[in-house]
Image 1 (cartoon, one colour):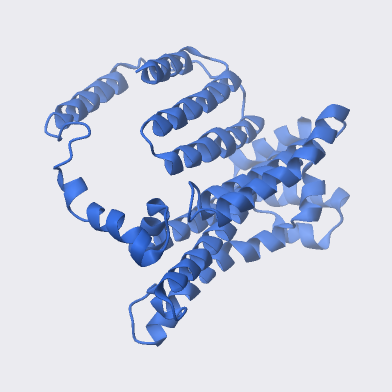
Image 2: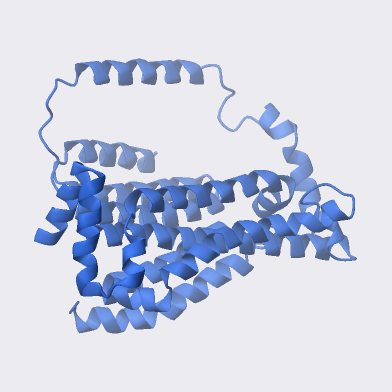
Length: 138
Length: 203
């Protein structure tokens, strides 16, 4: 893949900011718009941009298919794991109040864990779908 | 109002367009307009999702689909009267259904009086989280969101199962031989797949 120099250089400049923005959307989801889902899509978009400019092989060196196949269910498991401690301690599933002594902190932790699970699953699924399309086209 | 008019204009343009590349670009435009509508309605979270998923990921995936298929709409074989009738009747039924809905923005509907006040009141003092959308998604409706994540996972798995069928041969062989073997494996499965494989090689 031989593309425009400007495109390549600008993409390399943009990528860290896109990923940073995704992380901002993720961690700032409690206070502003956004959350795990949006952050996952944005970070997947960063990798897709990389794949569009530098080719799919270069992207698969960074994020191999095997890693995605691990990450996709891992996110769901993280989400479920956030709910399990409450069940063990006799409360309802996904009751975050057992995660910390202070209720507010517990809820912040719960939301953070859950949203991280969403982020991981969404980002890896989007990228895996993109990979599937591209692999099919070759 | 301007945004909704633009939405209608973009929709008509999509219908008129025969070149599918243009349709993809226009659907991206549609998503961004929809995101703007959501911002006007103060639904910033939804606007963000619409902009990133609708305009970003969907456009890329549609382009990838165009890469797999032809980039031009084929001529239709049948007269479109029956689908037109179905669409018109469904549309009329939906419009008729909206007559029974409460007025736009009315405050005394069940939607605004049932659980929403509690969410709005409790979110900051009890949960300590200012963004109510996040608390509703992750706390009050946590189980729903869990289901949604599972749906995303299932959708991804479905796409992977449908579109990929030659991973096993890839692990063992180096790249050059791998293609031939994959094609051989494919031709056994179905004739439709063989055509795609041969076309991919021709391209």
